Every structure is written in structure tokens, then in C-alpha cells.
Amino acid sequence: MVRIMRRTFAAVAMAIAVFGLAGLPAGALQPIGPHQHFGGRVNGTRTSAVVHTVCAGPSAGRTGPVAGGQTLSVVRAPRGHGNTGLFSQIYAWFVPQSGATTAPTQLKFTSYNAPQTIPTSVKVPCDGTGKVEFSSCPYLAPCAYGWVPDYVTVQFVNIAT
Image (cartoon, rainbow, N blue to C red; front, side):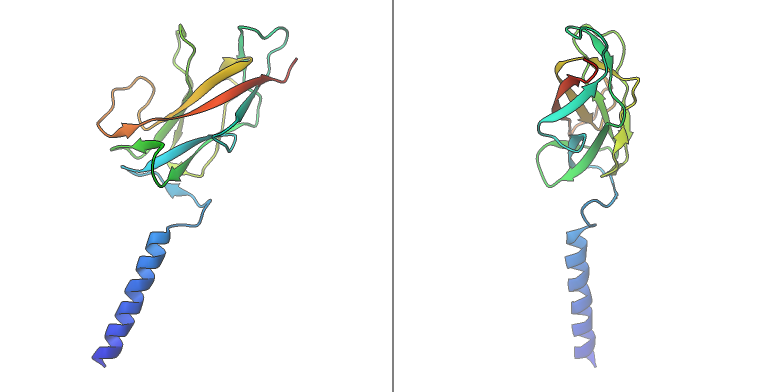
């Protein structure tokens, strides 16, 4: 009887270890926790990310709104990229151009794999390149030891010309 109980216990422990290490299925919502690595996504990608803008007329040197239906999201990474440090949320914003006088609009993420729509009120360069910062600390806030932001380089493309 003891032998059967040991085998059953061992089988249950093995199943818990296997399924516990596997985690949730890819794409499932997972809460963001402290001391986790993460990666930002712009319109579902971190490489060759494009953000469409809507700027009527000449766009050189101007800013304008992002086109609707575009998203930012955060995925959990096994290593590298960003690190949440002590925190359980990630903020994302378009890094302002030098000389900007207003704080950027931030999106707050509390779960991985949960895309959020970029508000069309967000103003970015009409054309050119920029970056989106993903950080467990809000814009310009002092932060605790251990956090590491992640950046995604984007290409702005004006679809109104």
C-alpha cells in the first residue's frame, strides 16, 4: 500500500512540475509580476515595426496623429530585453522628440499578451523613425533598483500623402 501511495505521489509531483514549468499556453493572458523579463511589441512586432500617421499636406518636420487601429503590447521573455524589477506593471509611450514640452500619453499593462489600442490623440512625427519605450516605471518617475526598460524602434509612415 505504501509503495502505491509513493508512486501516486511521485506521479502527481512530476505532473505538477511539468505543467508548472510549462506555464500557460502561448497567447494566454498572464499577469505581469516582479523580476520578470519582457519585450515590447508595436503592431504585433518588435522588428521592422511601422506606425501609420495621418498628416495632411507636407509632413517633413511635423507631428500628427497616429492612424486608428494600431496597438502596443507586452510579451514575457525568457531573458534579456526589459526587466520589471520590483514592479508588476509595464508602461509604454512614444519617446518624445527633443524639446517636447508635454509628457507623452502612456498605456499601462498589467497582463502579457493583452494588446491595447494606441489612442488616435497621440501625436508623433509624420515621417521618419522613433522609439517606443516599455518600462515598469512611469515616464520620468524615479525608479527602484532592478528595472530595465525595453525599446522598440519604429518607422513612421504618413498614409495621408
